[in-house]
Image 1 (cartoon, rainbow, N blue to C red):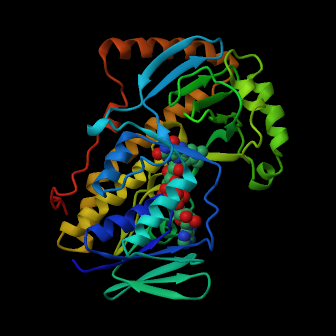
Image 2: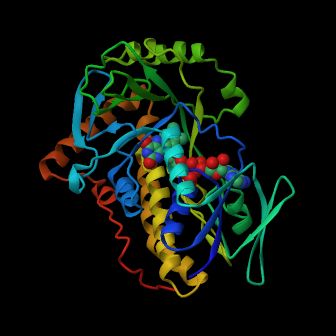
Image 3: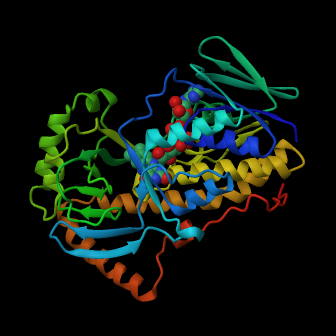
Length: 400
Ligand SMILES: Cc1cc2nc3c(=O)[nH]c(=O)nc-3n(C[C@H](O)[C@H](O)[C@H](O)COP(=O)(O)OP(=O)(O)OC[C@H]3O[C@@H](n4cnc5c(N)ncnc54)[C@H](O)[C@@H]3O)c2cc1C
């Protein structure tokens, strides 16, 4: 169909959506709130194989970014290795999960969207949207408006589009964990490059992985029962993070304290959230995708993956369904169950991290038994997440 789509947000879901729509023959214009993107420049994320599979459907290759991350090891603060798992399956051609800097991923997606002919307008913060007789009118904070046949809200966790579509939808849920991290140089983590090490310490969780260039990329998740305000978080200076984290990991075996000491600049901290169930994803000609519709806690490393899968599946639905409304209904029937299961699994994983020193012993025991059972049975309970495949050419069956 020769639609024109307005995509709100040039993050992961928005840029991937623009690329997918273009491939489906649908004209897309992207409206991004920020003038120049800050992109949370320091942060990194792992694109699990299901994300890479969805990117393949768009002929998107990120093999020049970051590094392969084929395995995860899990250990406790006592230094005991609780288990080791593949980080998802291996795709044809030997492709495995890949860890990349978030800013590099954003840049690559946007560059590809623009080179496909998609226009990205910066400084366009959506403040409202309404359906007209045969389209949608979007209003921006700078007083300008835009129109299109449909509007895709890819505007993240604090989505304004979500408020327009579902004013009663719950907001983001604080998970009880903070996040910080950094890049350590000049030390060895003692781990093979690319292996993601999950350290369930006595008082805090850390994940670290060595880049083949020798850097150690890490994040830590201190538990914090009450949600700090943005001002409270901003007031924690990098050196204060260093002191706090060093204290939290002091009793643990493993390289955590050395990694923290070898990091020049510790990231400004942030809270972690998820967004379990938004009962309404679309109304008339407007829809939400990515974190705007179903944010998952970072613990499961699937938020970006879900956003990219969403973008590809929605473009296929718009390509094949007889109307926008049928496309949206079909899209929801294909996506809701999967993303809500992922959010639930992310919540459970995050729960392991937030346990205090008393609960840690039974936790380590349960995890160790679970890992042994998995190794014996030869299957990972997250396999269903990684094995998801999207065939771009396969027509979508209308379920409206
Ligand atoms: C610490 C951390 C670690 C993570 N690690 C992983 C990982 O390892 N693997 C993984 O798959 N996922 C990970 N994630 C999750 C992943 O980053 C998100 O799920 C993903 O970025 C969601 O993409 P999105 O495009 O929906 O939202 P975003 O990337 O947040 O993009 C939203 C965009 O919309 C713009 N915007 C917002 N409001 C408006 C408006 N009103 N008008 C116009 N534009 C607007 C924003 O400026 C932004 O550019 C992690 C997240 C965190 C916080």
